[in-house]
Image (cartoon, rainbow over all chains, first blue to last red; front, side, top):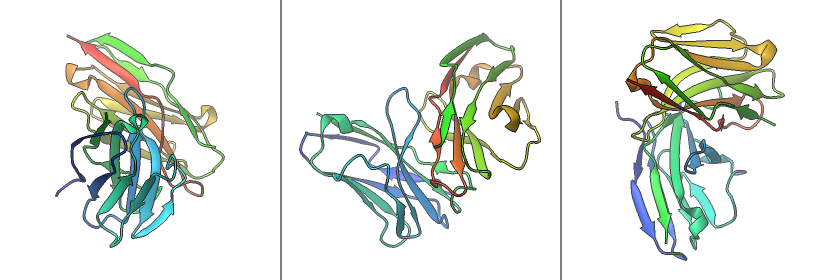
Length: 114
Length: 115
């Protein structure tokens, strides 16, 4: 079946612009996670959802970052007023439920802020 | 707090050698889950294995094997008879049952298999 998909795969934006990153999880997966991966590092947690409820947003760096999953399926991560330090690979993952289950990752969105 | 340490930043071996990637973790939970992921040069993150804290049996899958030892808080990964296609960055990760419902990753080990 289809895996986790993310769009766009690459995004170049100018400093100060808003961006929206989309994640389409594996069908039937309850939990959806967002991570950020800097070059040469492991992914770092940003936020996660069970169904449409945002359960934990402790990893969001500041209030320019927000996420939603209004119908419990597709999720959008929004970064307002982007800064150069926001440049990274943003990865989405989904799992059948929460911590006990493996997370399957999408291909990521490479964000470059110029 | 959760923490995962992969002390080996880079490993380089010749094809057909065996290689072990180390992973040490910290957690206060009694129930937790350990994972290994592979990130090949193409960049995707590929799930390899999940173990829960109550199952200390070692696991073998083809050339891959995993050794989980709670006494030393380690979950090491061994590739037997390595192949060039095994070249990748390997990440160990931890999630807690009662704590934060997220994966905490180690820094990764870059494995290069030379022909």
